Length: 243
Length: 268
Ligand SMILES: Nc1ncnc2c1ncn2[C@@H]1O[C@H](COP(=O)(O)OP(=O)(O)OP(=O)(O)O)[C@@H](O)[C@H]1O
Ligand SMILES: [Mg+2]
Image (cartoon, rainbow over all chains, first blue to last red):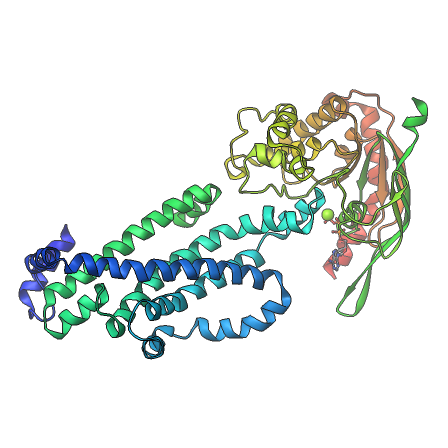
């Protein structure tokens, strides 16, 4: 509530080009909604984002597992991953649009590219940092390599994989929006970009608010999923919160 | 069944172990020769770092001996097997499995159906007094409860040979005594596996075992094997008897020098 009040205060005391009062944002919401543009934009963004993140998740987990369990794959891939993980890949988004043209394919490619690295890295790290003692305990009880993989390595890595997916979702959403700036004829990114060109600050903030809300909701859902999938971790979360 | 009682379960023949560290050979075990009979409870004591854990890991097949041979029931050990249970120094329970699913772990690996595994595990959970905690995760248990779950997990596979590496070391003195008592009861009520039990506590070794093996400090060699003649079932009051104290004194005399020399070498 305090935040909203501060927003209003700021909006009325600065340029309309920089801040928009809540009423303006609210009215852009209705205009956009009634014209059907908002529905189309949301659906477009959703499509690119979901497909891209899905590919990044599945692909990232598979590549991560491969790297953590196969030395050859690790030696081949690790230099690339290390080099690319800290590169702001979003900057090459325009290249994708040039190469693949305006449309879904280019956007999915951008989303996948920026979202896949945290999944690969977290999956591989999760497997590699699995507790030696637990692996040994499994062997001592007669486990074979396959049993250890399924019953120890995967469950150990699960919380890491979930954090990787959480990052993938955040990065993926950014990737989608940025891709839409340059190479789309619809979507929330497109809406924001167009509005910014015409100094329609209300619509710009409408887009920002929608993205922020989506981000918050997805993160909340992911935490909830994590608690369901990895209930033993709830204690770790509490432990870190206490400190 | 005198014949069966004297059948050799575990045979260590000239077992030596040398580690390579930074190009230097570290001799950890030196020609350990020893046989353990079926259904026997043997405790191994020795100074810290003398190779007790290494010895046990070699018996389990988690590590191989540099020289010599380990035979279980006459067969050479080449790797871990489902006939052996191992209770680790740390409890090593799987944090993502409930107590029940930890205890059924070994059975699952043997291909026992979930429902049957649960039925088979329940008596051991009851035996270690964790009934009611079947669906708790390890982090929701106290240290003593975790160690009891750890015991149940090892007992549930009905191992012919049970290897225990200082399983009570992390517990407070009171809980430890209760667990010793508990262990003997579980062992006597289950089918009396052969047990090799490592400990630092001399009184723990004497209270539990039929024979106590005293190792020298590194490289570990057998210093002496002390037979413990107290009848069974034993209860904790045994520890307060003069006979018990006399045995402790004897063993303490044997390893006092070893412990001291180990401490000096550590300070170097
Ligand atoms: N993987 C290894 N590589 C090199 N040295 C090792 C290795 N594992 C153990 N050692 C050495 O072997 C010696 C015996 O270790 P071990 O763990 O068997 O001792 P321990 O008798 O179980 O000691 P404690 O009572 O403290 O548990 C130690 O000096 C240790 O440093
Ligand atoms: Mg040890």
